[in-house]
Image 1 (tube, helix red, strand yellow):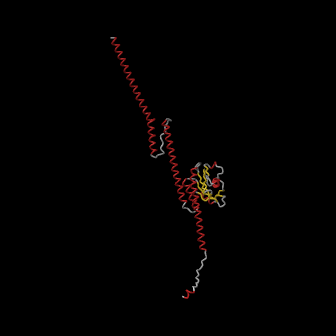
Image 2: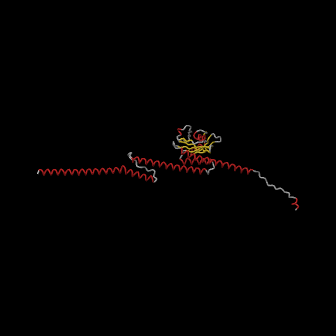
Image 3: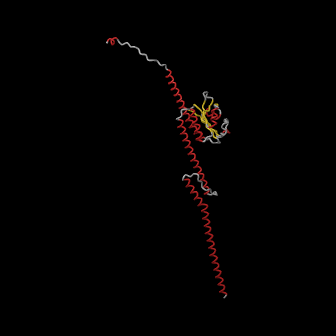
Amino acid sequence: MAVFGLSLSTAATTSLRNQLIVTNILIGGSLALLFVLITLILVRNIITRPIAALSASAKQVAAGKLDVLAPSATNRDELGVLAESFNNMTAKLRQSMEDLRRRADEATTVSEVSRRLSTILNRKELVTEVVNQVKNAFNYYHAQIYFYDETKENLVMAGGTGKAGEMMLAQFHKIAKGRGLVGRAAETNAPVLVANVSQSIGWLANPLLPETKSEAAIPISIGKQVLGVLDVQHNVIGGLKQEDVDLLQSIANQIAIALQNVQQYDKHSRVKSASVTSTKSLPTQPCSWKTVSLPTAIRQQ
């Protein structure tokens, strides 16, 4: 009886041990499965989802939507660095496209100015057309043109934009050769660019243009002969750059050619007018007929 009881106790213990093993296996399996599920969720959130978002952003950029940004990663792992690099790339693409559009607009403006100047044969109309087109096309604060006077010692304003331009014209505004940006550009026959006029020595302030922050003066010349200066001003520090100088130099060259055409036209008109006046002033003489004696032999016939 005791032996039977011992056998029963041993069997129960074995059964209990087996149940514990099975329970441990089930718990371990469940924990492993839970760990796998958590890992998959984390992989989806940390890797798969950001990659999918980055892929979607790349497709939109490829379709021409350069303002799209990849979702920023919260950590600095490989995916975070990749997203940041992608956003930097799209920013550079946007800047490149903006530069291309700006250059295309500039080329169109220069072409339009050249076309218009070729049809103008009056200097005052020429100046007015140029300063207004330059200011409006590139959103400058002010544009003006100066020409040398007969003594070649002063640059006299020939035209400017806005009320300030009208007032300076009424005041016969002029700048001595060598003074200010305009005078320096004329004296050296070279462009003068100042990105911040408050830090420029020798810059001449104009009370009629209080918002000027940067300025560029471009000589209007044919070879070594300086005819005048194209001057533009911006109300933003650094608003004028070397790209603006290159563009304005191209326009200044067109102005020089147009001025030659105006001068040739004026000269031709004066010669033609003088010729007409001279013709009209000639005295009118009546035509007189003289009797011509015929040879005697013919007369006798």
